[in-house]
Length: 220
Image 1 (cartoon, rainbow, N blue to C red):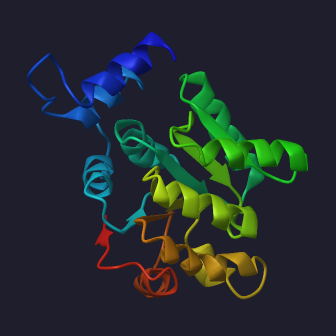
Image 2 (image 1 turned 180 degrees about the vertical axis):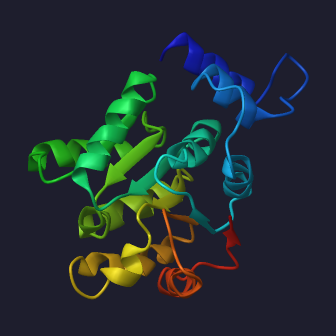
Image 3 (image 1 turned 45 degrees about the horizontal axis):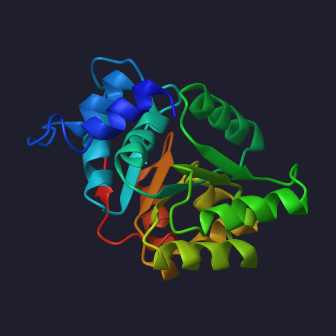
């Protein structure tokens, strides 16, 4: 683990021997991602996520969406599961996290069955080495993933589900990507769900909340 990441993770729990950090999110923002300030509604979203709430967030492309869940994912012990429909986007985010020295894994059709087994087996360890796990909705809803999430929940190592392009729940849920219409199945694990979309009408927001079964979500 790179020194900068180790320092930031330590700062997220304590800034010296006796005094907890006053602002662990700011510590990670500066020490890992090298930004001095949050943009737009990022800080409010990070706060809601760290409070373990269900969240619906609307951030346009280029608005710094990933930092909103990367920062809590680094601060918290355990793994954040990220679901995205676009493999190109998945690969890009995995590359970026690796460039920051952050442990990340993924499952896509490009991996062999043996490689996928290796990822799932590592995630079920009592102390998994990864901070983030990326998957398409199809793999996130697979039987193998369900067994993995169950074990992670029992080990208290599954922090939250992050659903990117959440408007697809409304627009694709019954046609192009039926798996998006089934993501409410993830609520069986009693883990917070954080939904992101770049744009959404009030009606679409209501449908996202309903179809993902978000419980009293913060809307940022």
